[in-house]
Image 1 (cartoon, helix red, strand yellow):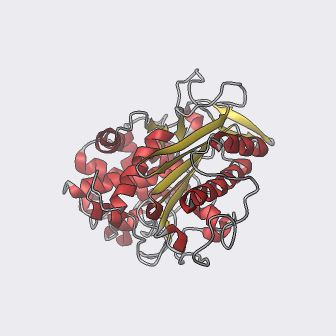
Image 2: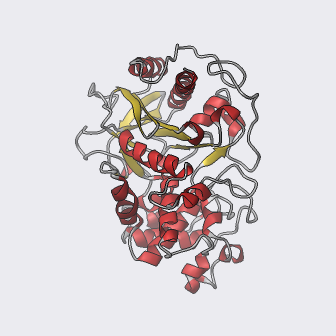
Length: 410
């Protein structure tokens, strides 16, 4: 779940592929002349490939051209617009050690793109009156009052989901971190709660209200939901989010059956070459870290999640009320991060905010973004996370935005 840079799909385009300039920190959005032209011009770099328009039949060629040039195993994308899948394409192989082709129905690990799902699950629990946005860890675990750091006794779920609770980013500082691994004894609920308990005993990195991206905040919230409901986060996700949205091909951990190449495998770089990592202990983060980023899914399943958030932004209720969706999309305090989404509000052509996120467990990479003002969203996926994979994702993102803007200009 490491975030190489905090930018994601739309951010990487807008920032003229300068990822380091667009972190999701406490500063404001980057500005851009408005309105920009649909292709090239201020703020949108000229396209090295003719992007065309959505639905012109060229998407697969564009994806394959970029995949080949950047030398990644597989590269895929799905674009949604006006409540339907507008187009999708996948090019490449499931493993560099095989010529088995990836397909549009394959499952992809999305890393920290999971965070918007955990935030949405929390919103569902809020609307069911099982928890509130102001609930604190101490409200859930009063028995930890003697050991919980004083700052964390009053932080809220919103603070935790917006990375403003001061949670340390170094998971290795947790004394019992080895006991949270999959091979350690105990249930995933027990491991997640231990992880949360010991995080809440550490010295905060920052005061409350200061943005510092930390996976631990989401692990804590997941453990809080489990304590309140008595149900594992994974089951809550299946019952409360995946099921109602019809996300029937979504799950947790590295996708695929051990010993079979029935899904793409993640890859890591060793000695300058990519090595495929089959499903198993080396293929993902510990299951206890799930709320921060262990979901896998098909691109069409993620499209259903995008539809829910796009409709909510347009005033249409679904999993939760429209006002709750809109609350989740609002940056917290003076940051550019909402609840599971980074937010950029500095672009007139988008007719509103851009919501986006990047995710990687160092073996996979996903870039997701929605543009509510254009009623459009997309996710780019690849089964590697080296520099070439990031470059491929950035380049494809550029082509896709130009493609979308060309279409809207017609």
